[in-house]
View: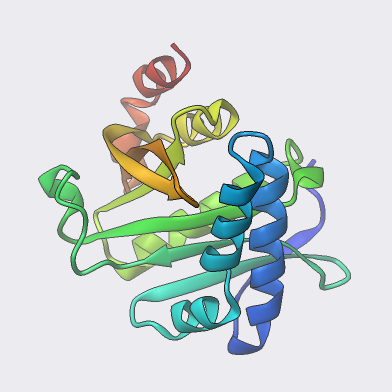
Amino acid sequence: MPPRVSIRPAAPGDRDCLVEIGRTTFYETFVGTCSSHDMDKFLRESFAPDKIRAELEAAGSYFYLLVDREGEAQGYARLFRDLEPDAALPPEYRTNSMELVRFYLRPALFGTGAGQLLMEHCLAEARRFGVETIYLGVWEKNFRAQRFYGKNGFRKLAEKIFMVGDDAQTDWYLGRRVSPEVNQASSSETNSAMTA
């Protein structure tokens, strides 16, 4: 049974909380996959308070906090409607689409169902915004995340370079149609491809 959690939109006053969750969960998930120099540089630059504030205030940017019964944040997601998406994406993901830019959950909640609740909320929000497709980036060696996204109907679209400090890593773009009816028919095929 999922833990007793709720999801709410993040406010400007949540900036420091978003910084802490981002830095902590990224470090705990990826420590040892790059040098300490590259990790420190990435955490410092990607989760700088001013950068997170700008993302909170940006047009088309939406943060959602996952909070426990005590009101403590345990994760968050960010949806973004990019007006200039990566040309590497298929055409149907470059118009009327949203990017799931961040999807962070404290490791203590892995396997509890909390991540699934947050994903379902993001998909519902994308439907509410009226977009047709949604996509995200995931490290090519983050197999746990790939399995989770595959179970939610995401399939590989393309590859991109993702910089962790000065370390150029390969990320996969994954995407799906927002409408659940469209994804249901291909879910078994997608899951097989993701776990092959």
